[in-house]
Image (cartoon, rainbow, N blue to C red; front, side, top):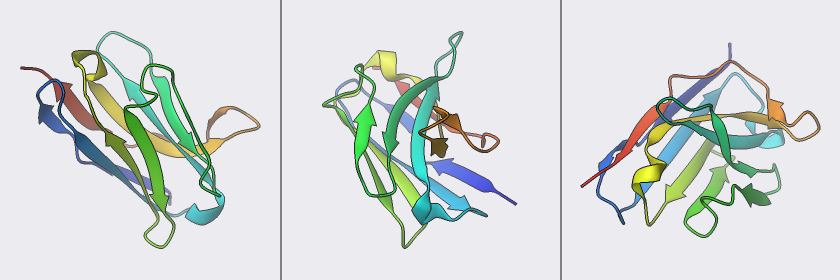
Length: 119
């Protein structure tokens, strides 16, 4: 059974930082690309960043230069380091395994972790 458990969200002031974690089980983590998505209130879920099994990464323009995606294959965990946070980054953040060929996720979504950027 596939499980994706996101953690690390919280309330942070503008300009602050957070590090999100995504613990995966039930998949062969090391061969999967992993992605972080987010869904802000009243908006569609959007792709934030993807990291390939070899470590190459791509980012949405809105987070480029501020967010860094990484992975630890020994721990079956993906991370999203978020710096210089802005109120517009407020959203529920989700992770999932990602199919580059299909440009979509592979498994049901987890519960996500809420990030609130506010003074």
